[in-house]
Image (cartoon, rainbow, N blue to C red; front, side, top):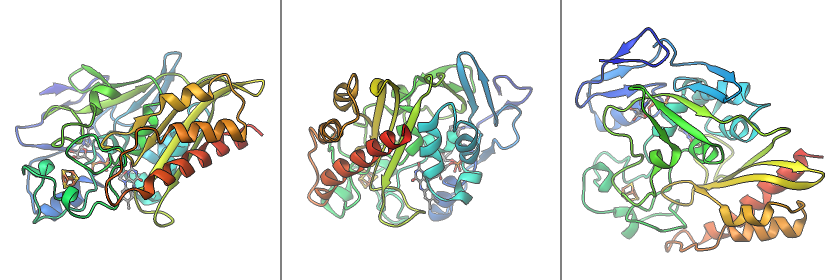
Length: 312
Ligand SMILES: Cc1cc2nc3c(=O)[nH]c(=O)nc-3n(C[C@H](O)[C@H](O)[C@H](O)COP(=O)(O)OP(=O)(O)OC[C@H]3O[C@@H](n4cnc5c(N)ncnc54)[C@H](O)[C@@H]3O)c2cc1C
Ligand code: SF4
């Protein structure tokens, strides 16, 4: 039995049990697998939903819907808000939560097929690597070749973020995601770990944010490549910046080489082109994902052009 932080409620996750926040990912998987684990529904747990601000930043309850994150953090954390408000559909954002988004499972079609087995479903191989991997990674770093699904994880990499677990312990985003090299894991939470809240540092003064996704249809689909940026601009010169790209590796990637080009520079066409090119360095696409190298270039370029437009 765990006393939920900042709450009157307790929760208990039995061995083999799973927690449910919005249920938008979990229910689909359980139906596909015809699985019947014990479900601990966190909806209504005191303190699980809601956003509060303090001089230290914002505390976002794990059960806060993505719609609320997008609406309420628009002014203070625009990059997080725009990225969150752009994913999935209004219906999914109205039910899906920030904690569920960070811990959702991969969208790989082999993993989601009830009759297929792979590293992530207890098997010992990756059928996508030798089979079809059109939506796969472009930075091939481990045995699994499907990108991490979480847009919000990508956005939170751009902020000092602390995950507060229900047992009172905490984790960084790097501790949640790892380096993506373990093909059996979508995230590194232990069984029974529950994200109670997400703490995010305060936004910068006059922070600007931008996000763009390249997607195979208008909405209701995970992006092929996505990028998010936040920046503080002084007199036309970037004073602070954080840039991350998703849809390209088994974890979202913070693009530090591009950030080094951007900082202390003006957002000219040349700077944008150099930063976008830096985001493709080290790409080693799979046989079917070579197209994503150009898409990274185009997606980051569009994201930075949107950042420039946000200041006009
Ligand atoms: C059409 C469509 C398009 C989508 N496009 C995108 C996209 O572009 N980008 C994107 O990021 N997502 C996308 N999604 C996924 C969507 O964002 C997730 O389904 C949603 O965020 C999951 O949140 P939830 O609260 O419903 O999670 P749940 O379904 O409740 O849970 C998801 C997983 O997290 C675990 N979990 C839930 N709560 C906690 C907790 N508090 N602590 C620890 N573990 C927990 C559950 O056990 C489960 O394994 C899309 C979904 C759909 C249907
Ligand atoms: S290991 Fe990864 S890429 Fe391979 S089939 Fe499983 S989820 Fe898909």
